[in-house]
Amino acid sequence: MRRNISSGSPWEGKLGYSRAVIANGLVFISATAATGPDGKVVSRGDVYAQTRAILDKLGQVLREAGATYQDVVQTRIYLTDIARWEDAGRAHGEVFGGVRPALTMLHVKPFLDPDMLVEIELTAIAAATS
Image (tube, rainbow, N blue to C red; front, top):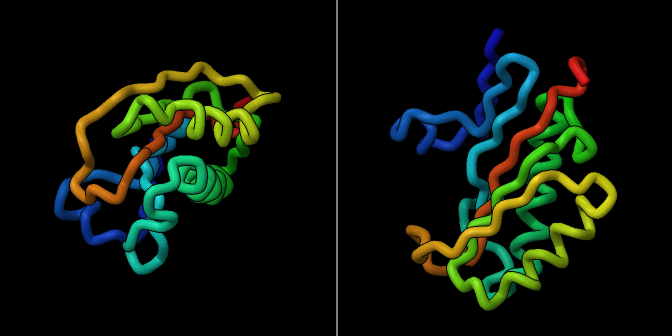
């Protein structure tokens, strides 16, 4: 069984993706940036604050999928400046220190909006099947 979760973004239809997909007991959440309801980047210039904002957004998506941070098995952090990995890592550790999912941290070229310093995607086990 498969269920798509939409954020309502017009980009989902244009690019052909979903905010999240639940399939075979797993939750896959697309890369997420630190944007507010207006679509503008929050906490410009601050990797730690952007990471925390993203993790909060991901927590909301997890709840909609019937999961929690405790169900996360893998996270991937994409940074435009790998020298700032500790800021992202500190925020990640505050949320996942007790969960300790598999983690990949990647240095990437700038995103479409240069104010986006970090994006995060994750995979979780749907709480109903864990």
